[in-house]
Amino acid sequence: KAGVTQTPRYLIKTRGQQVTLSCSPISGHRSVSWYQQTPGQGLQFLFEYFSETQRNKGNFPGRFSGRQFSNSRSEMNVSTLELGDSALYLCASSSRTGGKNIQYFGAGTRLSVL
Amino acid sequence: DAKTTQPPSMDCAEGRAANLPCNHSTISGNEYVYWYRQIHSQGPQYIIHGLKNNETNEMASLIITEDRKSSTLILPHATLRDTAVYYCIVRVASGEYGNKLVFGAGTILRVKS
Image 1 (cartoon, rainbow over the protein chains, first blue to last red):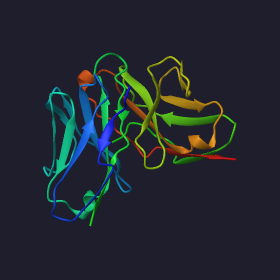
Image 2: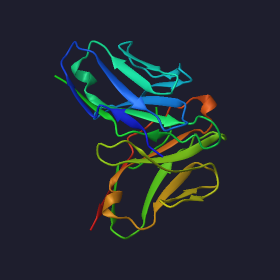
Image 3: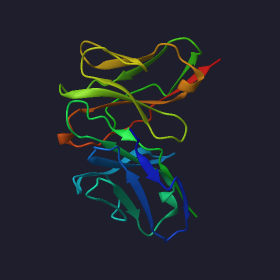
């Protein structure tokens, strides 16, 4: 079974630009969560999508947004990029049902903002 | 904020058991203990989880104290490839409560030859 796939793996942008990251979950998983990892703040929850609806949201500004498609694939968008948005962005998928509800992570997208 | 406390770092000799402690004194009755690890710049990898009974899988064992206020992850025969940051997380298992994982700083495990 294929794992969580994130594209692209690396991205370089300049301040003020916007960026879109993509996440394809494990087949059959309907929940996709996004996390930001920086050396200073560690791993922080951005938001979760389930059945094309945002279910949870972390404490991030409105520049960070996302969506989920009917095939459960998800995208996150960051507008008006700032230097502090440089980070590893991770996507995790889970079935969101049953007692296990294990989240499986992708390899991440490394975003550098210059 | 994370509901767990872990030592910032630990060393272990290759081939020996690595025992990683975690304190979660405010854990609720319906919260599970999950362990993940992250090898440098990769996505976190699920290791094991449990509610109150000890658990074992092909990667590790999880020992949870009877009062559930602490737990220990055991890697029985650590190898150099087990060098990583290990995160202990407590959360409700059911996805109906949301899928937010709250990560603390974790424990950096260094396996040395």
